[in-house]
Image 1 (cartoon, one colour):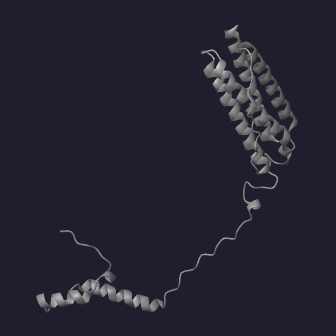
Image 2 (cartoon, rainbow, N blue to C red):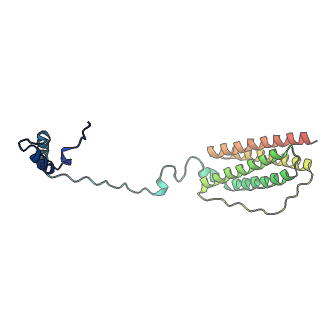
Amino acid sequence: MEQNLHTPASYDYRQYDRVWQRVAPGLEPYPDMKETEKRLAELRTAQGPAVPAMESTPLPEVPEGQLPGAEPDPCCMGTAAEELLEVLEGFIEVELADRRHYLALSRQAPAFARQQVRQLAEEAGCAARQLMAACYLITGECYRPAVECGRICLGRWCAAVRERYHAEACNGMNYLRAAESTTDPCLERLLTELGEASYRQADALLCLLQKSL
């Protein structure tokens, strides 16, 4: 039979003494445990009053501008990148306009090209979001792009694909040119990646044009 293990302080020996006095008046109940409790009481008396627990000292508040990663002029997306802020905003508007053109183009594209044109629209939207994130890193403010609601007239399929090819090739050249003009390493990498992506999109449009002629 298992015995429940408790600390001596958890027992009220007066209740058990009354029971044992009726059962075995000459027997001392739990002598070892009562001796242990007596020794613990003597130790507590010798140690004196309990020392109150030390209160934790609150940490001093750190101003937001001094937090790690919130430096006034960080090595990336800082003052050097701010010099190209208007250029980045222009790229955002270009990418959003490209996205609208591709969505319109997908509605008149041949069946074999529709999915790829929709993918080009998605990539243009992703590039715009990357550039808006870069603007936020630089300024701490969200850029609000212009809202275009006008109707897009694309003309015939092959002519529209030709126009899109030249637009993407020019985007690639402009991205790489902007990357060369900045001394901010992170912004340079982002613009280089976007320029290379634009050239890949131009290659994809060239393939679509080859299949359409």
